[in-house]
Image (cartoon, rainbow, N blue to C red; front, side, top):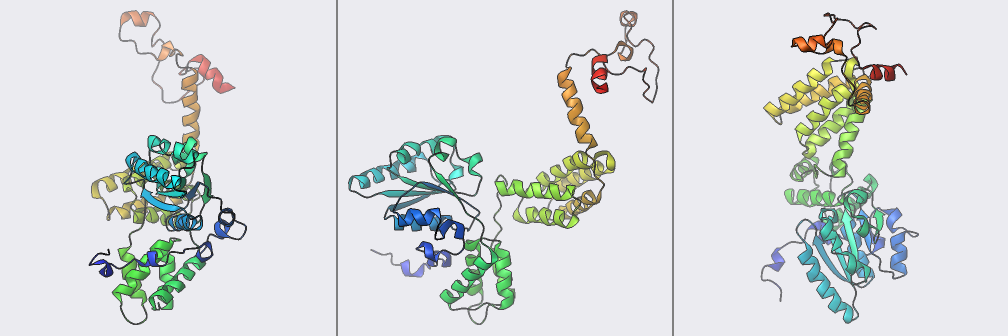
Length: 397
């Protein structure tokens, strides 16, 4: 029996427009095209456990639902964020009973990388014996986040973010579904702001249509809708480290524009500003070093500014530091010498300090030759003997 209020709960646009066959899927030609793995698995009716790896809004959940429908399997869906072993056991119990009645089951686990090792291990016997066809979805690199035992039982399917052409096609379909039209400026804006995420695009479209119930939806209305759709950012995910790597490599390459773009993309997505500030302090010594020694002072001051002022005002300080570091001359001398002498310290951990530079606070120690012949001097000479002989010999080679 339906709820008294069921008709008042509007189904989200993204759900209304979810494809039901591979032919309806927008984009992902390599995954759903005529000669693709999924197409063959569907055409040959070969239920197979899979792992969909791709960015948000690339169609992972949609594809799992299409496969369950195509293979005529009972579909169950859980999120690894809110579920655990207890939920898996309950689903397995139902799947075993369904199997006795000749009905197969497909379990879709969103964000499967959130499961710990024991939770992932709980899936193994049921995937192995065919009780469940498992489809996992992850935005993170499977080789880092999925344990080897489970990964060996899944075929990894890599999804890409949607292209602007794909997003434009989704927009066209959404306009037809809603019987609404966006202005050309609004269309361009919503495609750009969606950043390859189909679900984000549809959410923005739905919000914009609600904000402006009549007439062509304007750029201004679209901007308002975009402002309500927060950027997705995981401070511990692969995208976080990819952006951090891009920032550092852009600084190293002295590309101010690219450096600022990645800085503000991280800040706009919610990255911890102190994480960025720490990376800039490290960069100042590791990649600039003695080519511009002041860079370390500037980067440290930037860190202190973030720590004491906080966002949003600290954005000025971080932008200041990033411009200066990108423009600075670069040198690896500090990093190279760090690694060289760190290695020497490990190679000669017990080398004796030369007696002439040892402290000699007692008469006995002076009698042993400690501090003998040492005179204050500001410059190194070959006869100074600051290093243990074996270390000095190693440096000569």
